[in-house]
Image (cartoon, rainbow, N blue to C red; front, side, top):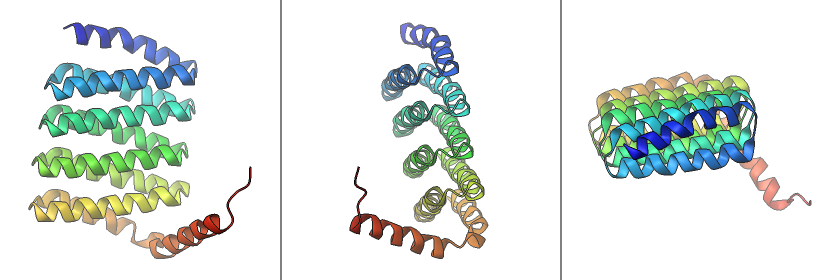
Length: 223
């Protein structure tokens, strides 16, 4: 009860700091809420874990739309911590709630061309998705796949090359893990999402990014 009340008190403050674009405050509040939610998940306290995730979800949308980049990344990180915690404890409802909010925040980040935030969301969705497969949380695995596909599609439209490639790698990873555990729906969803990326010239894109990476290693930027 004390934890829940503390989160409810945090919520209006969190929303206002996002609206005001107070980036450092947003980062600190997001990380604090994430830590509370992670701890709650580890102790199988479903209600506070879901409240923490919900509060972060609202923060993430506001932070992204107000172009608070560091705040958006912090929210994504915090949601990922909660998501991993509740998935590890096989808390299906809380995991579904958290992974949905994480994915939606990642989608908004991609739409705002925050590529680093979108990449973080994709990596966390992959980690939670594979964890959900291990715990046989089928709905959470399916949701992770669907949202990875959504972020990848937005990244493709916005020209976010690294995020598009990461979505592809993450979907392939989950697809193979799902096949190994006979989770048919997650495997099929991943395959369908990957088919949508086939016309994106992924091989050429991968070559281009590899060439750019080699150039950076050879000719590092001098500040």
